Length: 401
Length: 82
Image (tube, rainbow over all chains, first blue to last red; front, side, top):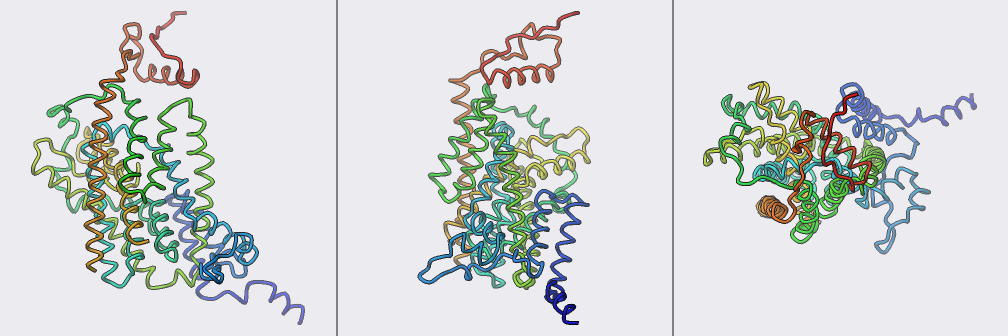
């Protein structure tokens, strides 16, 4: 009998609570969405497995509150002490996430995957990437009104930028205790872009507006000048924009600077192609694994099962929808004053979710007119949305940190 | 709440300002490269490249660029009858 009791004590069976079971259920649902439904599997699968690891009782894989690693005199435990006391997941979290290292590293890879060509060809459309950031600031107001602190509200609002690394980076800086739910909400809604954009677009765009043919408009009202050396322009652009951003919004530099560096090493071409390959391949993949697992591991039952999580899930969706609506309405306002009309779907893609938002908008336009390909125009506002949300994050961090 | 409204106005203002600057910067860069860095030899438009599909031509130019690490240029492409 004594042996059986010792055997029972050796297992985690006695430590499993109803909260543990709920967290396992959440992890299983997220794994199902990532594996079976294909919703952002590269991030949702590591995040979901991180949730599981954090909620295995006795596994020592859940991320602990920062107060526990604080020592007297405003000092913190060193990484060896953290690993010894709280396990390897906390070592990874406090060295890679809490320092804000991984989101900019991922942004470097995103930069390699980004092509500023469509934006340079349609520069005016970049302004709709600004209008689509309205969701961030609207939800900031709403969240403050319902009792979130300004820092928490800003972290919630940034979900409206539809940019995972930006949302995570802002939350690390402003409200690290909400990192898990915010990351989950941001990536879940990004995965739901094919549902949310058509939903909002059909509410706000008329059938006539859906059929506005951008190529026809270009033929009617051609650009004043053509680009004679796109390659040179694409090399100079990230250097010049990085310099400008560093001067105007320095707090956006960790994200925007790394994005532009990644883009530069791609655009230079074959002489830096090895760097570009590394940034978009092994480095970004490694960063993604550790980001996903550690963010998931912040979602212990004590942190996740709270009223604020519900607020984040609802608020994140509303932020997303307002951002899409903001872009669409900005195009509508523009169209009332301009002869050269723009398809409002171009405004809907002012969020960062590149290139999924553009693909969804293009498919939507093709439903109304089989010859109306608007992908390259959507990409212009879509890419500017990445810049816009990074700038918005920079503003929030510099004002609230 | 007043602080949140101020932050909203400042934030949206800054985002618009930065993206207006992106538009201005982009235009300036295009004008400068159009003036000082015009690409004179477009391989797709050479007379000897006639009869070759643009996509194939682009693939050949890209392959040469990778293999020669940017040093090689394609001046003409011809079909060779066997």
